[in-house]
Structure formats: C-alpha cells, structure tokens
Image 1: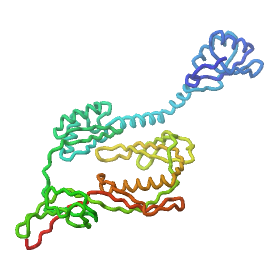
Image 2 (image 1 turned 180 degrees about the horizontal axis):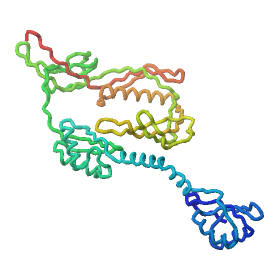
Image 3 (image 1 turned 90 degrees about the horizontal axis):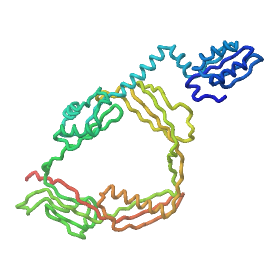
Image 4 (image 1 turned 135 degrees about the horizontal axis):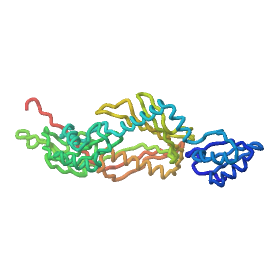
Length: 397
C-alpha cells in the first residue's frame, strides 16, 4: 500500500501479527480504510506491518473478529521522541529556561549611545530619548519606529538640526547633527605666506599683504611670497597675510609595476557558524559539519551585550567562512606603464591637493625586467605652494 505523508511527524508503529487468519485481518484493514505498509510475512501464521499511531486503537474490533493477536515491535516518529524527552524534565526545563532568558535579554535595549554632539550635552539627548520611551532595559518591541523616534527627539533638542536613530541588536545609536552657528574667526598672530617648495610662479593673488614675487619668478623653498609687513622700517604694521599663490613644481617618480598579479576573489559560496559567548568561552549552536572549501577566509562578527558603557561577558558571535580562489591577471607593457603613471598622479593629488593641475609628463627611463616594468617619470604640476609663517618680533620692538 501507499505510505502516508509525514509519517515521522505523525508517528507510526511496527507491529507483529499472529493468528490463523492473518490474511483476513490484513484484508479487513484495507476495508476499514486503515493505511498500512511494508507488510511482510514472517511465517505461516504471522506477519509484520507498519501503521500510523492514530490508527492503533482501531485494530481492537478487527483483531477480535479474526482471532489474531498483535504486539508492538518498534515505535518511531516525533511523538515517541517527545515523550522520551519529556521524561527528562530537568533537562527540558533547563533548555527552555536558557532560550527564554536569551530571548528576553536579546529583546531589550541594553545600551544607548550618543555620537556627533559637541555643544549639546549627552545627558540632554538621553533625557529627550527617555521622554520618547527610549532608555536602557526598555523592551525593543515597545519602541516607536526609528524614523518617528528621530523626528520626535529632533523636536525636543533646539540645538540639533537632525537626529538619526539606529538600532544594532541590543544597542541604540543616536547620531546628532548640530545646527551650524557662525563662528568668530580666531585671533591670529601676524604672519607671512612663504613657498613650500622650489617652483616657478604661475598665479598670485594677495588679499592682504605685500606681494614679493611676480608671475614667472623662480622661488626656492622658504622664500616669502606675500609679506605680512606693511610700510617701511620707520612706519610699519604687521598683519596676517592672506592670498593664493600657485607655481610649477617638478616631481620625479620611480615606478615599478608587475606584469602578472594574483588576486584572491570570493566565489560566492560560504558557510555560517553561530555561537553563544560566555566570557572567554564560545558554545557553537549552528553550522556543524566539515568545511568543503580548499581555500577560505573566515569573517568573525561579535555582538556583546552591553549595559551603559560596559560590555557584559555574554554575547552572540557569528563566523562566515567564505570560499576564495586565486585569479591571475596579466597586463601588457603599455597597460603597466599606464597604471604606473595613473598611480603616481593619484599620489600627487593626494599629497599636494586635488586642485593640482598636471601640465606635462616625461618618461626619463623605462625597462622590462624579471616580469616587471620599471620607469622614471618626471611630472610638471601646477599646485598651491603657499603656507603661513608667523612673524617673529625682535626683542627691541
């Protein structure tokens, strides 16, 4: 006969039937609509069969009618496993209590952090959040939506232009963007603008002070570009020189680029392991089994429970084991030269400002050796070359 669905979930029995009318008993089961399967004769007047647990009590009238007797040989399925488990009450209660406590702890706000505030006191922010029902040991499901909390806390803080509320597990982070207030410029001592390197002047604008150089002038590092001293030796005034000076500067770079590079890339396959952490011990809950990857990288994420600013010795840790493979990338000599020059350009912009302008470049020397390209490149760059230098008073002044 056809095996019923979900037999392990519903529970089933393996029975031994004995009697002179075993065949009549089995036929009566089919007539009564009782599903049985794996019917196996074990002798002239005996057989084995399997049936669902819920149909066992329906056998009594059929057994009396045919004069057969039955004995339970095996009990299978979740109902019997659950019964055996329930007999170990202490173990069951301990497991239930553990998960109940873990669920309760993970359903509460343990820590509220405030970031980005400079003039607004953190206590004022926490007080405003508490008035909106956001505070440590509050149930997470009782909180308003993060967007609504953000708007309400912003309304309670006059000095904030925007408040962001973000939840990460049991931690709440409140980010403050304070309203911008015009600041008074700090008092500065008189100073010159001097050159930061050897260059040829291409542009000069003196907002305050006296220009000491002109366009196309050659200057050395440390030369005064805009003086902060007005007047002559008898009648002079010292001010804070302000302005902008640009000049042509030469940068020489030694570049080395390999023609073949090896990179590690993720294949997209991975496995996850989850742990409960108690102090310096971790108990694995999920993700058992062997790792099927020959090469892998493990990413570890730990989320401790915190109270105020203190981390508790209890938390949740997740390991992501990602499969990686090595991929080789080959480039031509021309591509290597292009990559090397682009890398040098990015380095110049990072060091000397994004407003720097490349005027020209010249490859002084290049060669290919041992799978690499070697170059010496000279860049001509227009960049800002002025920096401030405080004016030192003479002791007699």
